[in-house]
Image 1 (cartoon, rainbow, N blue to C red):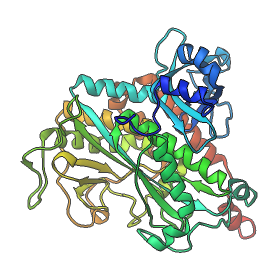
Image 2 (image 1 turned 45 degrees about the horizontal axis):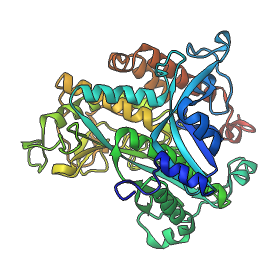
Image 3 (image 1 turned 90 degrees about the vertical axis):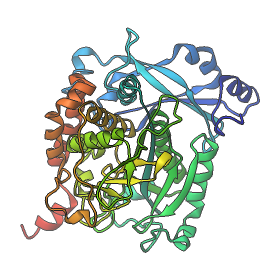
Image 4 (image 1 turned 30 degrees about the horizontal axis):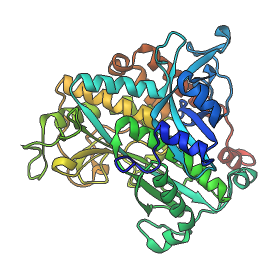
Length: 464
């Protein structure tokens, strides 16, 4: 156990814990299109006797259903005419963990396969695996970290729903960015999250207050890309379960309140050699006049591809109509596609040096599906390397005021059009995958467009 993360299990250890009565339930899960965990609770003996070797099955509509679990028509992958059959869920034993915030429970993440033993192409984990294979074929590995922000509320989820999600009480009453006193007031929750995550094979570095009342950030240790996506999904899920157990609630909405800061998912990425020993972004090339940044051509071309395709990637970074309300001038969320050294006004912030050199993209929101966000990023970066794309000039100063640089998409409508026109993503993901997610994003936009909001009633009920 000493050479592995605390909480991560091998099968022999799982058997021992089951025999000792320490575990009696196995959660077999997979991420859906939203990044939520779907799956089954399996009795421990049945898991060992059957699921371990044979996997399990789940209805394929789970890769087409919307947030309300409504059946959505128009998908080729699964529909009424195909009868909504099953996908085969194969446990990835590298993800086996003891989940300490649940009673006597372990968890394993599954890959989804078709009846003819092929990966389900539209499954988020399959999409990321495909880009990692392309990355390996090009001679690279990727290390990724995600910084996930959220709001903590004193209201339980049930109380929030009863209130119609209006007039909720945040855990803090004033802005608490780095504020230790305010953090102390909610330490019963955040301390539990830190301890339980670290004990469950999801190692935490630190937590801190963020730029909103009741807003917080708990940073996980970086990892290889697929492992980081798994950690992110499990962490986000666990935060909600721990909040529910404490009669509180957390929200990862990109913009939960008009007057308050949005919540982000800052994505850090660097390319490494296949053995993970050498950071291939590091180099001796001086980039930008008067700057101290030295990097490699690989860094420059990856960044160039990432920035060149950033607008087409945005549905994977900001998947809902609400997501775009986060991009507000001087709100800490980027509005301009510039890059700069250690500059939080830039959409692309360069941090670290030498072995720690990495690109931080500040565009993704806390509502992004990590598997899809990372996969889209790798696809864009690989295209940049293949075509030796150049980033624009390094920017200094307030990037919000850079009038000549391109801007982030203003709406999901706009981002959907960019994705639909992206030949790069169609080549990287395949038309089948792109069309599947275009339908997903269009459905989210359509349902938003059809809804009547509290704002509309307040504005037009009497005076309209």
